[in-house]
Image 1: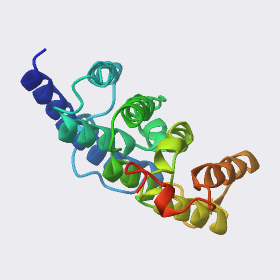
Image 2: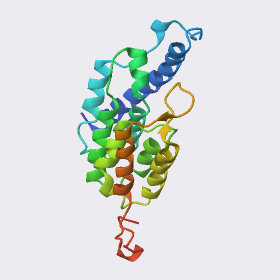
Image 3: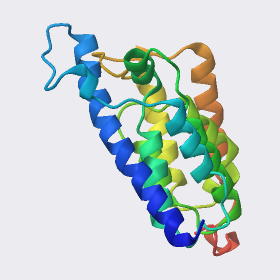
Image 4: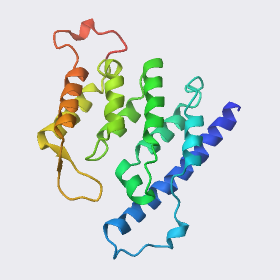
Length: 210
């Protein structure tokens, strides 16, 4: 597949995922409120499938062309991370794991390429009042790279915000759902892991760290 063909394939998949995300939002409203009137018949809505996951896996498998297709890749990563696991289960009745595919790809490029993809990382971390297990795993796997960047403070602040409120807002639910003890400890450990050594000065940081 040429670079142009790869870019077209990524953008085509992204367009499909945009529609599925919108359809899932609509279908989830119906699940939460049986009286909710769908805008169109159920069969007209798109959902995730094994075929879509296979295509996602194929397109997010090789990182060698990342620098040539950075914008397209980042858009696809963000779209994959925009899916909520509980919404997927509720709508599809199956546990389609699309975020881990993007999480693995993001981990690989974060470790391989500099500078790191700050915009994408901030989006999946700071967007909304929910942070999923895939995002937490990515932060843990790439803590060394992230804590050397200018964005580590924003991420740590968000994690502390979750800890201070004691939980997160779940899709379709009002109020805060308290953390399980293991999740709380996971986030606490991440805060420590993402905090740079306070004894180091700016002069001691190299150009990749400031």
